[in-house]
Each structure stands twice: as structure tokens, then as C-alpha cells.
Length: 139
Image (cartoon, rainbow, N blue to C red; front, side, top):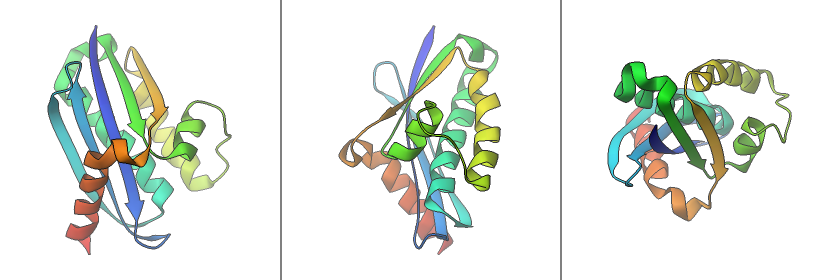
């Protein structure tokens, strides 16, 4: 079984406003193996948070190829809302979030497991920097 950790973050300057997502992917030893940073145009911060997970999982899928079903992923992010939605604690009510979830769920289902963990903002600085770089590029 292969293990990866994705630190994911998304944000917008204004809500909605210029938005960006970032994800740092690390292997089981904690080594950075990939990162992604994408400008999203005008979006909400919650849209950007979901997008960061999607981008991170897509990147891991590229890394592992056909071994996707033998790969376990832990997603760490500082958005308590998204973590609780993905863990089934909160219902997803907003139509845009339902659409993002509908994109994310089948992708996550391809992996052996994907778990979602809330971390303090201080533990998510790499992903935050990538999301801000994306917003800077688009602004």
C-alpha cells in the first residue's frame, strides 16, 4: 500500500473574488513529491477549498497511475467546514458545494482510502502559500 499526504488550501480575496487553490503532496516519509497551484477566476473561498482537494487528488492519481486502488491518501486542511462536510458531519446544502462534492467523491472513490483531517492554519503554510501564489498570478 502506498501512502500520500495532501496539504490543501484554497482562498478568495473577497467572497466571491479572485480565487486560488494550492496543494502540496508528500510521500510517506514526508518528502515533497509534487505541488499544484491554480488560479480559479472569481469564486468563493469554499469552492477554492474543494478545488484544492480535487487538484491534489488528480496529482496523486498521475503519480501512482494504475496503482491508484492501492493508494491511501490523507488530506489535511484548515477548512473545518470542508473537512466536516467530507466526513459526513455537516450536510452539503449550497448548490455550488454540491457540484464540487459531485466532482470530488468519484475521484476519491478510486483510491484505497481518502481521509480528511482538520489542521491548524500554522500546519498548512505550504498549501496556503501555493493558493496565494495562484491568486497573485491571476490578479
